[in-house]
Image (cartoon, rainbow, N blue to C red):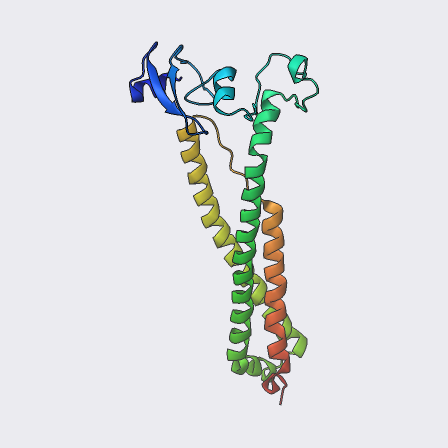
Length: 225
């Protein structure tokens, strides 16, 4: 057993303690060693004979060896030799995949609501500015000039909004990275998906311009009189 488990339970070397196995039968286990000074796969460690006595079908998921090859009793049993780094990466592969799926869903939902808000805002704002657009046309501005002005204004709004949002996000991520670095004792880099950010801003820009121009072009007041 581990030293931490011994401290919490009061078990000492040489003592015996009754335990129940998977079959429901009670057995007495004797403490023959206390493991300390490093990580252990479990708090209570049993030898093969004790495990087989309680559960004949039990299998060993991991065997630690100094050689990177399955040999001896492990040969032919389908054992897969891995380095320590490969074993740690394989253990976290499923968790990483689930995290990426959750992240993709979160980004998709957030981006979807954001795009809907951008399109709705631009349609309403353009419709509300019908009088201003008519004044511009009566003042001598051409149809192309007015549409270009709307496109430029919309692009500026999207770029400024993206910049402000990016600044807030970067500040929060930097604070989280510093906190994790302090807590873990190692440097935690701040990773920013610039490609995804650029694609999201680009889609918002295209949709915003596309939502702002048609309502203005279709209004009667857009034509000069």
